[in-house]
Image 1: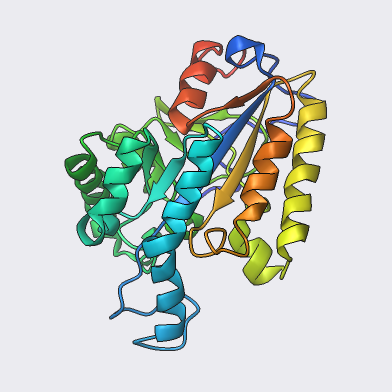
Image 2 (image 1 turned 180 degrees about the vertical axis):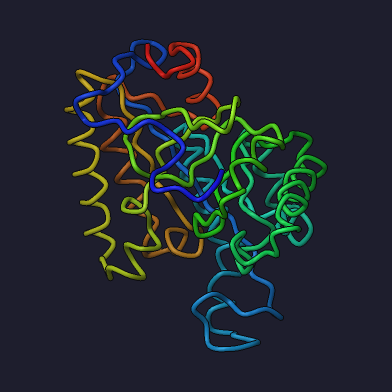
Length: 291
Protein backbone atom coordinates (compact mmCIF):
# COMPACT_ATOMS: atom_id res chain seq x y z
CA UNK A 1 0.00 0.00 0.00
CA UNK A 2 1.02 3.59 -0.42
CA UNK A 3 1.75 5.70 2.68
CA UNK A 4 -1.61 6.77 4.09
CA UNK A 5 -3.20 8.28 7.20
CA UNK A 6 -5.23 5.21 8.22
CA UNK A 7 -4.98 1.47 7.70
CA UNK A 8 -6.22 -0.44 4.62
CA UNK A 9 -9.51 -1.37 6.25
CA UNK A 10 -12.74 0.40 7.21
CA UNK A 11 -12.87 2.09 10.60
CA UNK A 12 -15.12 0.08 12.91
CA UNK A 13 -16.30 1.01 16.39
CA UNK A 14 -17.50 -1.01 19.37
CA UNK A 15 -21.01 -0.09 18.17
CA UNK A 16 -20.44 -1.81 14.83
CA UNK A 17 -19.48 -5.31 15.95
CA UNK A 18 -20.20 -8.31 13.76
CA UNK A 19 -22.87 -10.54 15.30
CA UNK A 20 -22.13 -14.22 14.81
CA UNK A 21 -21.15 -17.29 16.81
CA UNK A 22 -18.16 -19.58 16.71
CA UNK A 23 -18.64 -23.32 15.99
CA UNK A 24 -20.90 -25.12 18.43
CA UNK A 25 -22.49 -21.79 19.35
CA UNK A 26 -19.33 -20.82 21.24
CA UNK A 27 -19.12 -17.14 22.16
CA UNK A 28 -15.38 -16.70 22.72
CA UNK A 29 -12.45 -18.10 20.72
CA UNK A 30 -9.33 -18.75 22.80
CA UNK A 31 -6.24 -18.22 20.64
CA UNK A 32 -2.89 -19.13 22.22
CA UNK A 33 0.23 -17.96 20.34
CA UNK A 34 3.62 -19.29 21.47
CA UNK A 35 6.39 -17.18 19.93
CA UNK A 36 9.18 -19.63 19.13
CA UNK A 37 12.13 -17.52 18.08
CA UNK A 38 15.78 -17.80 17.12
CA UNK A 39 18.47 -15.32 18.15
CA UNK A 40 21.88 -15.99 16.57
CA UNK A 41 24.75 -15.83 19.04
CA UNK A 42 26.81 -13.86 16.51
CA UNK A 43 24.17 -11.15 16.00
CA UNK A 44 22.92 -8.51 18.46
CA UNK A 45 19.94 -9.52 20.56
CA UNK A 46 17.45 -6.62 20.28
CA UNK A 47 17.91 -4.48 23.37
CA UNK A 48 21.06 -6.42 24.30
CA UNK A 49 24.53 -5.24 25.21
CA UNK A 50 26.80 -6.42 22.42
CA UNK A 51 27.99 -9.55 20.64
CA UNK A 52 28.13 -12.11 22.05
CA UNK A 53 25.55 -11.26 24.67
CA UNK A 54 25.61 -14.40 26.82
CA UNK A 55 23.11 -13.07 29.33
CA UNK A 56 20.34 -12.23 26.86
CA UNK A 57 21.14 -15.11 24.51
CA UNK A 58 21.27 -17.86 27.15
CA UNK A 59 17.92 -16.77 28.54
CA UNK A 60 16.34 -17.25 25.14
CA UNK A 61 18.19 -20.49 24.48
CA UNK A 62 16.71 -21.86 27.72
CA UNK A 63 13.29 -21.24 26.20
CA UNK A 64 14.16 -23.31 23.14
CA UNK A 65 15.88 -26.08 25.11
CA UNK A 66 13.49 -26.42 28.05
CA UNK A 67 10.75 -23.81 28.31
CA UNK A 68 8.93 -24.57 25.08
CA UNK A 69 8.58 -28.25 25.94
CA UNK A 70 7.28 -27.39 29.40
CA UNK A 71 4.67 -25.15 27.79
CA UNK A 72 3.79 -27.86 25.28
CA UNK A 73 3.14 -30.34 28.09
CA UNK A 74 0.81 -27.95 29.91
CA UNK A 75 -1.10 -27.02 26.77
CA UNK A 76 -1.48 -30.68 25.82
CA UNK A 77 -2.88 -31.43 29.28
CA UNK A 78 -5.65 -28.90 28.61
CA UNK A 79 -6.25 -29.93 24.99
CA UNK A 80 -5.08 -26.57 23.65
CA UNK A 81 -3.23 -26.43 20.32
CA UNK A 82 -0.89 -23.52 19.77
CA UNK A 83 -0.57 -21.28 16.76
CA UNK A 84 3.19 -20.76 16.67
CA UNK A 85 4.76 -17.51 15.53
CA UNK A 86 7.84 -19.29 14.17
CA UNK A 87 11.17 -17.84 13.10
CA UNK A 88 12.16 -19.96 10.12
CA UNK A 89 15.74 -20.19 11.42
CA UNK A 90 14.33 -22.51 14.09
CA UNK A 91 13.74 -25.02 11.29
CA UNK A 92 17.47 -25.02 10.56
CA UNK A 93 18.85 -24.70 14.08
CA UNK A 94 16.31 -26.66 16.13
CA UNK A 95 14.16 -28.89 13.87
CA UNK A 96 13.28 -30.99 16.94
CA UNK A 97 10.96 -28.19 18.05
CA UNK A 98 9.19 -28.14 14.69
CA UNK A 99 8.82 -31.91 14.80
CA UNK A 100 7.19 -31.73 18.23
CA UNK A 101 4.84 -28.99 17.02
CA UNK A 102 3.77 -31.36 14.26
CA UNK A 103 3.19 -34.22 16.70
CA UNK A 104 0.93 -31.95 18.76
CA UNK A 105 -0.90 -30.73 15.63
CA UNK A 106 0.04 -27.13 16.33
CA UNK A 107 -0.26 -24.57 13.56
CA UNK A 108 2.81 -22.69 12.33
CA UNK A 109 2.69 -19.13 11.03
CA UNK A 110 5.56 -17.12 9.60
CA UNK A 111 7.46 -14.85 11.99
CA UNK A 112 10.47 -13.64 9.94
CA UNK A 113 13.75 -15.57 9.67
CA UNK A 114 15.08 -14.47 13.06
CA UNK A 115 13.84 -12.10 15.71
CA UNK A 116 17.11 -10.24 15.32
CA UNK A 117 16.00 -9.14 11.82
CA UNK A 118 12.58 -7.46 11.58
CA UNK A 119 11.11 -6.73 8.16
CA UNK A 120 11.53 -2.98 8.51
CA UNK A 121 15.31 -3.50 8.76
CA UNK A 122 15.50 -5.48 5.49
CA UNK A 123 16.43 -3.68 2.25
CA UNK A 124 13.21 -2.92 0.38
CA UNK A 125 14.16 -4.98 -2.67
CA UNK A 126 14.78 -8.04 -0.48
CA UNK A 127 11.60 -8.05 1.62
CA UNK A 128 9.53 -10.26 -0.68
CA UNK A 129 12.36 -12.78 -0.94
CA UNK A 130 12.73 -12.88 2.86
CA UNK A 131 9.01 -13.59 3.29
CA UNK A 132 9.13 -16.31 0.63
CA UNK A 133 12.18 -17.87 2.27
CA UNK A 134 10.43 -17.94 5.66
CA UNK A 135 7.35 -19.68 4.25
CA UNK A 136 9.31 -22.07 2.04
CA UNK A 137 11.66 -23.07 4.85
CA UNK A 138 8.81 -23.78 7.25
CA UNK A 139 6.93 -25.74 4.59
CA UNK A 140 10.00 -27.80 3.73
CA UNK A 141 10.63 -28.68 7.36
CA UNK A 142 7.07 -29.16 8.60
CA UNK A 143 5.38 -30.41 5.43
CA UNK A 144 2.79 -27.60 5.54
CA UNK A 145 3.01 -24.04 4.20
CA UNK A 146 1.91 -21.40 6.73
CA UNK A 147 -1.37 -19.60 6.18
CA UNK A 148 -0.68 -16.75 8.60
CA UNK A 149 1.96 -14.18 9.49
CA UNK A 150 3.11 -12.26 12.56
CA UNK A 151 6.07 -10.00 11.92
CA UNK A 152 9.00 -9.97 14.32
CA UNK A 153 8.14 -7.11 16.67
CA UNK A 154 4.90 -6.74 14.66
CA UNK A 155 6.90 -4.59 12.24
CA UNK A 156 5.87 -4.04 8.62
CA UNK A 157 6.84 -1.78 5.74
CA UNK A 158 4.42 -0.06 3.38
CA UNK A 159 4.78 -3.07 1.04
CA UNK A 160 4.50 -5.93 3.53
CA UNK A 161 0.78 -6.59 3.08
CA UNK A 162 1.21 -6.79 -0.68
CA UNK A 163 4.04 -9.26 -0.28
CA UNK A 164 1.98 -11.35 2.14
CA UNK A 165 -0.95 -11.40 -0.28
CA UNK A 166 1.38 -12.28 -3.16
CA UNK A 167 2.66 -15.18 -1.07
CA UNK A 168 -0.88 -16.53 -0.79
CA UNK A 169 -1.32 -16.01 2.95
CA UNK A 170 -4.80 -15.87 4.46
CA UNK A 171 -4.27 -13.86 7.62
CA UNK A 172 -1.98 -11.48 9.46
CA UNK A 173 -1.73 -10.61 13.16
CA UNK A 174 0.35 -7.42 13.02
CA UNK A 175 -2.59 -5.08 13.68
CA UNK A 176 -3.83 -5.68 17.27
CA UNK A 177 -6.57 -3.04 17.17
CA UNK A 178 -9.77 -5.07 17.65
CA UNK A 179 -11.35 -7.95 19.57
CA UNK A 180 -12.86 -9.49 16.44
CA UNK A 181 -11.31 -10.49 13.12
CA UNK A 182 -11.79 -8.10 10.22
CA UNK A 183 -10.85 -7.80 6.56
CA UNK A 184 -7.73 -5.99 5.36
CA UNK A 185 -7.92 -4.98 1.70
CA UNK A 186 -4.85 -5.20 -0.51
CA UNK A 187 -6.05 -3.94 -3.88
CA UNK A 188 -8.66 -6.48 -5.01
CA UNK A 189 -7.35 -9.05 -2.54
CA UNK A 190 -7.93 -9.42 1.15
CA UNK A 191 -6.29 -10.76 4.29
CA UNK A 192 -8.03 -11.45 7.57
CA UNK A 193 -6.63 -9.54 10.53
CA UNK A 194 -6.63 -11.65 13.70
CA UNK A 195 -6.65 -9.96 17.14
CA UNK A 196 -3.18 -10.52 18.54
CA UNK A 197 -2.45 -8.95 21.94
CA UNK A 198 0.25 -6.56 23.11
CA UNK A 199 -1.24 -6.56 26.61
CA UNK A 200 -2.03 -10.20 27.38
CA UNK A 201 1.49 -10.96 26.30
CA UNK A 202 4.14 -12.21 28.71
CA UNK A 203 7.01 -10.22 27.24
CA UNK A 204 5.69 -6.69 27.81
CA UNK A 205 4.03 -7.85 31.03
CA UNK A 206 7.22 -9.20 32.58
CA UNK A 207 9.95 -7.19 30.84
CA UNK A 208 8.37 -3.76 30.37
CA UNK A 209 5.56 -3.47 32.90
CA UNK A 210 7.43 -5.57 35.49
CA UNK A 211 4.32 -7.54 36.44
CA UNK A 212 4.69 -10.48 38.80
CA UNK A 213 3.44 -13.92 37.80
CA UNK A 214 0.35 -13.44 39.96
CA UNK A 215 -0.31 -10.01 38.44
CA UNK A 216 -0.04 -11.37 34.91
CA UNK A 217 -2.41 -14.18 35.84
CA UNK A 218 -4.89 -11.61 37.13
CA UNK A 219 -4.54 -9.62 33.91
CA UNK A 220 -5.48 -12.74 31.93
CA UNK A 221 -8.53 -13.41 34.11
CA UNK A 222 -9.65 -9.78 33.99
CA UNK A 223 -9.28 -9.70 30.21
CA UNK A 224 -11.26 -12.89 29.90
CA UNK A 225 -14.05 -11.70 32.21
CA UNK A 226 -14.74 -8.59 30.14
CA UNK A 227 -14.48 -10.30 26.74
CA UNK A 228 -16.63 -13.20 27.93
CA UNK A 229 -19.30 -10.82 29.19
CA UNK A 230 -19.27 -8.82 25.96
CA UNK A 231 -19.29 -11.98 23.83
CA UNK A 232 -22.82 -12.67 24.99
CA UNK A 233 -23.83 -10.21 22.26
CA UNK A 234 -21.01 -10.55 19.72
CA UNK A 235 -18.37 -13.26 19.32
CA UNK A 236 -14.87 -12.25 20.41
CA UNK A 237 -11.30 -13.57 20.26
CA UNK A 238 -9.08 -13.72 23.32
CA UNK A 239 -5.42 -13.95 22.39
CA UNK A 240 -2.72 -15.04 24.83
CA UNK A 241 0.79 -14.41 23.51
CA UNK A 242 3.60 -16.37 25.13
CA UNK A 243 7.38 -16.70 24.95
CA UNK A 244 9.00 -19.95 26.11
CA UNK A 245 11.93 -18.16 27.73
CA UNK A 246 9.46 -16.32 29.99
CA UNK A 247 6.32 -18.36 30.67
CA UNK A 248 8.31 -21.58 30.21
CA UNK A 249 10.34 -20.85 33.33
CA UNK A 250 9.58 -23.16 36.29
CA UNK A 251 8.46 -20.31 38.54
CA UNK A 252 6.09 -18.92 35.89
CA UNK A 253 4.47 -21.99 34.32
CA UNK A 254 1.70 -21.94 36.91
CA UNK A 255 0.31 -18.80 35.28
CA UNK A 256 -0.60 -20.90 32.26
CA UNK A 257 -2.12 -23.71 34.29
CA UNK A 258 -4.19 -21.32 36.39
CA UNK A 259 -5.34 -19.37 33.32
CA UNK A 260 -6.52 -22.47 31.50
CA UNK A 261 -8.27 -23.78 34.62
CA UNK A 262 -10.17 -20.51 34.88
CA UNK A 263 -10.98 -19.93 31.21
CA UNK A 264 -11.98 -23.49 30.36
CA UNK A 265 -14.21 -23.56 33.42
CA UNK A 266 -16.65 -21.40 31.46
CA UNK A 267 -19.13 -22.65 28.86
CA UNK A 268 -18.96 -21.44 25.30
CA UNK A 269 -15.16 -21.14 25.01
CA UNK A 270 -13.65 -22.49 21.80
CA UNK A 271 -9.88 -23.19 21.89
CA UNK A 272 -8.85 -22.70 18.27
CA UNK A 273 -5.92 -22.18 15.94
CA UNK A 274 -5.54 -19.12 13.78
CA UNK A 275 -6.64 -20.92 10.63
CA UNK A 276 -9.71 -22.37 12.34
CA UNK A 277 -10.75 -18.89 13.46
CA UNK A 278 -10.17 -17.47 9.98
CA UNK A 279 -12.03 -20.24 8.18
CA UNK A 280 -15.11 -19.85 10.35
CA UNK A 281 -15.01 -16.06 10.20
CA UNK A 282 -14.81 -16.10 6.39
CA UNK A 283 -17.64 -18.64 6.22
CA UNK A 284 -20.05 -16.35 8.07
CA UNK A 285 -19.11 -13.01 6.48
CA UNK A 286 -19.45 -11.42 3.10
CA UNK A 287 -16.65 -9.74 1.17
CA UNK A 288 -17.41 -6.58 3.11
CA UNK A 289 -17.00 -8.32 6.46
CA UNK A 290 -20.72 -8.32 7.30
CA UNK A 291 -22.39 -11.49 8.64
